[in-house]
Image (tube, rainbow, N blue to C red; front, side, top):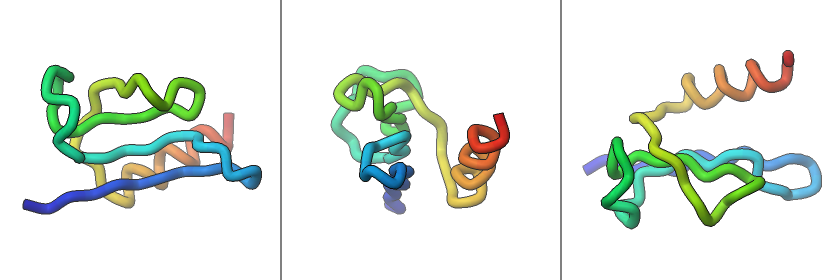
Length: 65
């Protein structure tokens, strides 16, 4: 099984987003894929399979808002 964890942190080392596939939230839709938000890191939301290109696209979208 391929696993992943992508972290996006700001210059203050504050988490912006983390996408991962750790199998510790089996009740979330899209299990095991989920996303942690820096503002609410302990309450992940359902995710989708991620790769580096999708993560970079998401970062570019937020930077250009």
